[in-house]
Image (tube, rainbow, N blue to C red; front, side, top):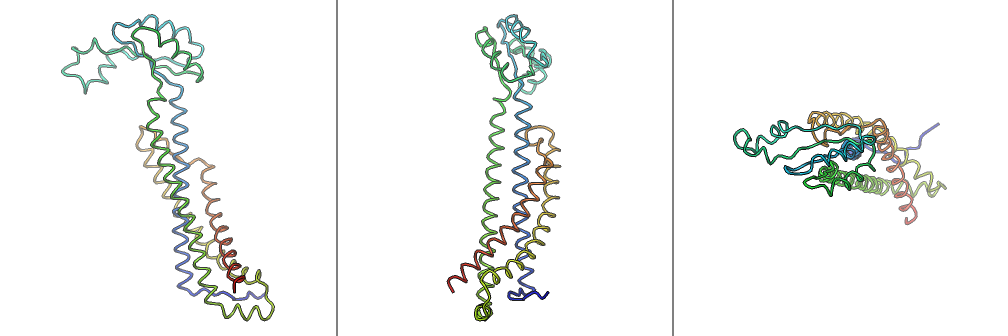
Length: 281
């Protein structure tokens, strides 16, 4: 079966389009990978801290009443760790003068609590609030600003992804239009012998599909090591929300699907551009 060479790309055109689409695929997969990695980090971060809280009893506060509240809720508590005065002094040593003895009487007694369910946190907070000198602090509230930074980075990555996909449509449309105009004479001949517009569009769609398929594979293959490097750097931080960044198996599937979707988007854009030109010619 002969393949009609209605649209022939010269070597320079093929090389340019392959490199361009490889770069756009790389940026798209990298942006989506960052969105997925950061989303999983925020979910893990919130899951880790949303069930934790600290009860602080200031000097002179009713520590016995606070302990009674904690003991009464043992069924909803997974674990309690009391931070001793020595531990608190050690944590605050950079801000204390000398050995910290002069300020030790101002250091609160603290109990770090891990709950089994979130509903129990609000209930204990209501019981701790009226106690003199006691304060209930949710860990999730303290980490909310860090999570907000993560969501802003996700929005920025999603914006970059949208812009790159828009660039894919613009580039394919521009290249398709140029190739079609270059081969206008061949199109006139095909129309004279009765060739349908769908036949002409299919020829360019096949050419674009071959080039973009190779480019998508190259871009995806280049983005995978980049995402692995980013995950390795994040895991080396060891502390903080960004240390939770990792690509789940479903994330790799989504990035591979995105590379395939770029090929489909390129083919659809080529078809639409050619059909519009043929209708107006």
